[in-house]
Image (spheres, rainbow, N blue to C red):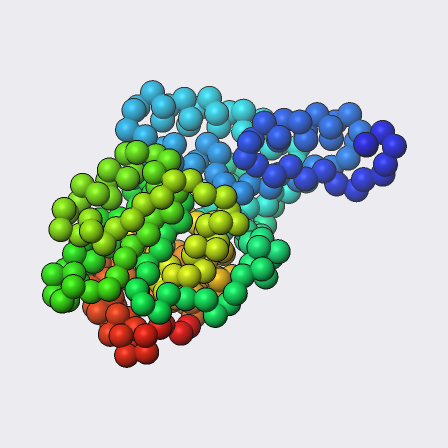
Length: 278
């Protein structure tokens, strides 16, 4: 394509980060400047650094980061998804400009949904995708447990879409407290379009974070596009807090007390109206 078509720039979006290597090669061969677009961190990825094995941390820090610096050396500039990533990338590549462009959502999928579709008989709390070890799932579950113990057989359910794909994640949910399991449902992995259809029927969308590890979660943009109330547990003191506050998209919980109190209020409103309008 580049042999017969004029291009001003080459943009490589990762991961996979091998695309950066190909972009660099094409840039050198055709004398076209290239731009590195990080949709996730590479050598500073917290999902890797959270690994407790010292050898994994050392390989990541010294070996992978060496190759990362080498590849990025001749980029025009760098793009990433959040201020937290920008800060980390600026330290690794101090001579490079780093710009922020948020993730987005599939407009075609969103436009195909019925915006007024919500469950009127059962208060649904929905979560989509992976749950990482450092996300404060237990804070939410404890608040939910307290809520269940106070309510009289509440008409409520938590749906974790796609969790069955990773058994240890499902086990983490179901092993917390046996008394809440009757209100929890997990599913196999679903297509993005199907997940959005499911989320669209929910009354509340759950977003899990960590107060000491601020990072952007791509699903927040799907949540925003669905125009549903979001429950963030816990406050990440960073990009997620900023996005939710600026868009007035939901509620931020600092602890299980907040979870309990907000669930109580939301469920009470649901019972009054038989639906929760955003």
